[in-house]
Figure 1 (cartoon, helix red, strand yellow):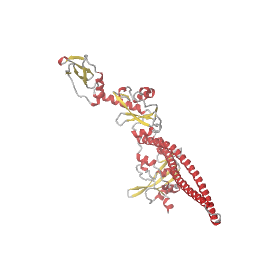
Figure 2 (tube, helix red, strand yellow):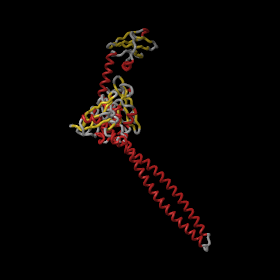
Figure 3 (cartoon, one colour):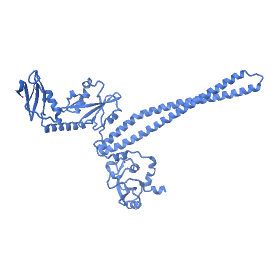
Figure 4 (cartoon, one colour):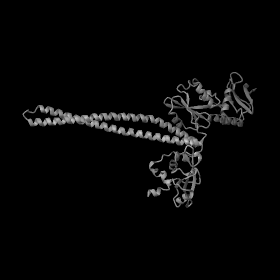
Length: 473
């Protein structure tokens, strides 16, 4: 550093670094200003470096304050390379961490943490590129904490960006909770929520998990729906029972009033009038009988109401028990689907694969409609002059084969393809996607899934079993 005297006797400073010069404006004690020799514009990408240099600039003489106008201490190319290298290294490091969920939206993060307790957290990509956010469960709420970055270092406070990577920051938060308690007294970073990674590098296994999770979710959802319908049905029965009890109570009070009136009237009648006495006695006996009948019905209805209320409470407990499990399954299914999409699976295929089939639409897809014991020439003979989408499945020496009518310009053609089967008896049209437990399931699913997903030349669905028309007629 060289010191030189500027105009007015004030001192200027010129700092020499590698490829860099720093210009300072020196404010003297009497309010004089003296610029140094050189000065040039500052690029926006180097702001953090400039501010850091400004923070550490020291005045040459006591009583003088230096306001730095600086240029980066690295050349723009070397600085950009350094930043890019830092981002890549941090990204590679993050990808190995189970608590890093990557491009997760705020809503998806909240949905995931809803099923966890206080202190569970995860890290996701922020909406700004190369930035990250900590999402943590706080009691019944979900909080987001932005991870700050300053001069290539990370932290959750702008004044404490001391960690070379997000991984080292998270490890510090786990080991030293006291380090953030002053600024965030109500937060706890105790339990990282790990992203399922077992099948992320194995697409066939991942797709199998997608299908199995879809079936589990479907069963659980149907179970939940059935119990919810029972809750509504029992609630209606409770309302009817309460109405019946109210009506019986009104009738009971009316009969009691009539019985009281007749009892009073009997006292005022002459004992010589035996006909009137007999008539009153008969009416009172009938009233007593009806009152007993109403009391019996009222007692039975009240017991029925108690049973209905107990049943309603039981069904409510089941639905409350199933609801979080259903939500967790839905989240897990979304996570698996997101991984499948990231690995290149088409969303259209995934949606069709997980779509629930209506029972009324699959009644004619029993194997008796399409499983034909024949060879390839016979299959072509049977499918001759049929409309596109007509198909049959025939046994062969090693498994099964599909023969299907496809559109070919203005005409049709008959195509054949092998059906693969694994040792676990799962079926599919390609070895990597044997996702179906039976031939029937394979056929039913491909009623809506085109074979073009496996072979671009076969844009056809298995719409019409070969024997369906004859059976329908």
